[in-house]
Structure formats: structure tokens, C-alpha cells
Image (cartoon, rainbow, N blue to C red; front, side, top):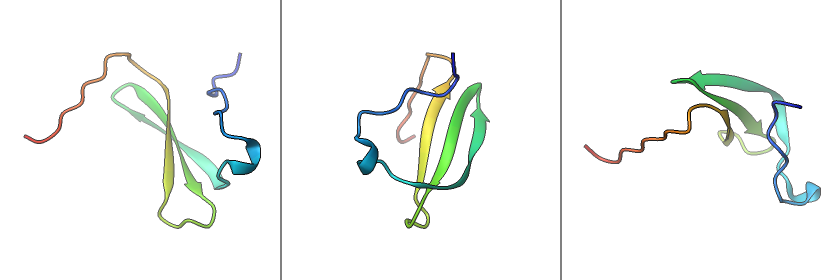
Length: 61
């Protein structure tokens, strides 16, 4: 079984292209894959791969 997430629902021809190798990042025990889109400088896609199920979101102070 692969640790990669399952492909999305978008048809292959509509999926964005990516430049270079992805960067793997771990933040607070959660693993993310970061990729740069081809032809869109400064645009990054972050994919959550695994980590604790408990998610806390805080907005403002």
C-alpha cells in the first residue's frame, strides 16, 4: 500500500502540472507535501498526507 494520497477527482488533462520534486514538511506531527505549479510562479499546493485527527483552527486573537 502506497503512502501517497489517492488521486483527486479532476480529469488528468485538467490537473495542474508541477515543477521539480515535491518538498516534504512535518509540522506538529502532521506531514505535508508542497509542490510548485508550472507556469504559476509563487503558487504552491499543500497536500495533507497524515497526522493526528485532532485539528484546532484559531482565527483572530
